[in-house]
Structure formats: structure tokens, C-alpha cells
Image 1 (cartoon, rainbow, N blue to C red):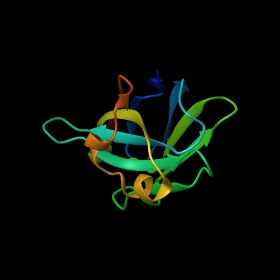
Image 2 (cartoon, rainbow, N blue to C red):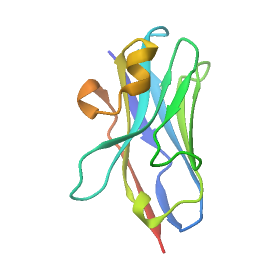
Image 3 (cartoon, one colour):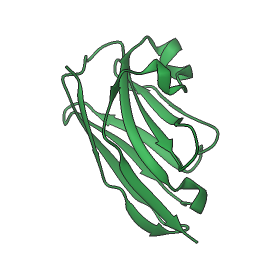
Length: 128
């Protein structure tokens, strides 16, 4: 059973940085997609970045490209999301998620319905 636990959220001013961490256990080391999502109040949960466990190939959605970086440390069973140049519109609860997928599907897996394993979320608040 896959277990995911996020941490690292907090309150920062616009232009600041945070690094979110997702401690993962029980996940397959091959053909598995791990992603970060966020959900702002009153909005749908949206994907921001994904990594495929086989090759650590990554995909970052256009909405945050150039500011957010996803990475996976398999030795530490930890998924990261580096958030730079934060904006007030980045304020949301951030979740990590996982699902069995090949890379072609993982790369495009922006929809939360494609994932079955979820963490509890960590709050990120950006003030102007």
C-alpha cells in the first residue's frame, strides 16, 4: 500500500521560496508516476508537475514552468517540489499523488482523477 506524507508548507511573501517534501513508502520502483497537485479555495485540484520513477523524467505544467521544479530521491523515498518566485496566486493546499503509469501517460497526467494514492496535503500561503 502506497503511503504519502507531505510537509514543508508555510507562509511566505511574494518572491520567496519553499521546498515541499513528500515522504513515500510502498510505491513501485518502476512504471510509477508521482505528481504534485494544488487546490486553491473554490477551485478544482490541478496538476503542477510529475516524475516517472523509472528514469526520473519530469514534466512541469505551463502554469508554473520556470518557477517550480520537481525531483525524486529514490534512495530517500522522497519526492520534492521546489517553489521559487512565489506569487499570491500560488496560495493553495499542495498534495502529492501516485499511480501506476508508463511515461507517455505520466507526462500528460494532469487530471487528479488519474491518481489513486494521495497525501493529506500541506498549505502554502503567499502574501503580497
